[in-house]
Length: 486
Image (cartoon, rainbow, N blue to C red; front, side, top):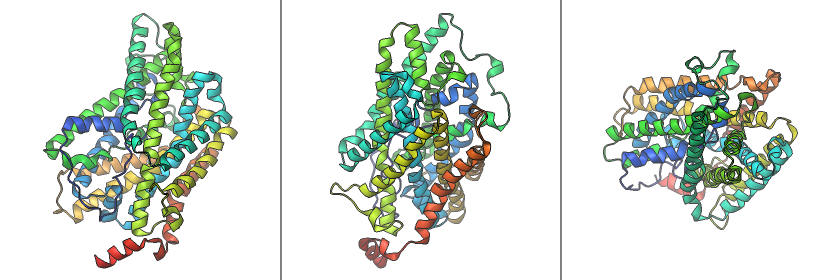
């Protein structure tokens, strides 16, 4: 699972934001931007346990979720500035628009612990690989790195803007290529694959719903396509170039996701694959085989650089979008709207950090680190799926209620695509409550209660409370004056 590398600083703006003329982009540039926003190696171990079947498990959500999301968000972005808040507010209602923005922000509360758990396991391969399975070690690393990130972000460092592109190259493309090339050489020398690579293994074995649960993780792996839809108006011919750009991006993203996952499955048996340390397990195995073990720490540093760059770039992004909407509409109390001397929403970051710290302690008290990682990843997916459910419904209503509203790009068969995306998102949310087969004899009821509580409290109860107890005084004076004169 992963999030886009580019922080959505312009994704959730109030409807009154002034228009800014954007420079022209080529469809190829937009395709590469989208690839950089979505692709990552962090999800590879999750699908590697399926071996060759990971190809099927990546293609299905690409068709039923990735494609509808990319094309539908392009129409919305070409017709309404302001991102998901504006889309849902116009199509449904302002409170539901706030819910969409809140879920974009709230999913990061569980995203950061799962991301930093991956970093912790990667660092362990530099220090002591045994630490990768230590919950206490993982919890300490999460807390130290998160609060360091808060301190860096609160300084308003402008250099953070370029970290995402460097993180993609250094931490994704280079190690991903190395992993796949070593894997191919490994097989070419006659070594057997740890996972069967025959045609009979193209489809996952059916052992009940639990055998398909890991596909849910791929929905969030593909999330973020809507972020770059805001650039659709920068294309010379959006109607022709945007679909071409998205299909190329889909192909590149699928290659980056599938090939490293296969490489891991060639050398690490499924029952030994760690959901947090699987990439490093594969690197260690390959480097050991080729007698270049000294490269293990180098590969670890590359992966760490990508994850930390993504975290720093994203840390202030969703919270900034939430802040701007809240200051305009008065959704959050004044304490959470305050800025520090660098103009950064430090109180939101600190409050989020307290919750993140509490969540991180779960790694210290739950024995299996991989289980905790999966639980947090699933809650993240569940919360973010609310955004897409609202987006697809809003898109259909906007096409029906505002058919003549100017749009730079119109999706062919919009209702069909929205229906497919809506059903896929709903199905993914339901399947997310089924424990994966890796949980073995764990309590199904406990798992369902944890996922349900995370989704209900974080994705629904908290935003409802903000709306229920909202006060007129929470809206900034400047916003009230602008509203009165408009």
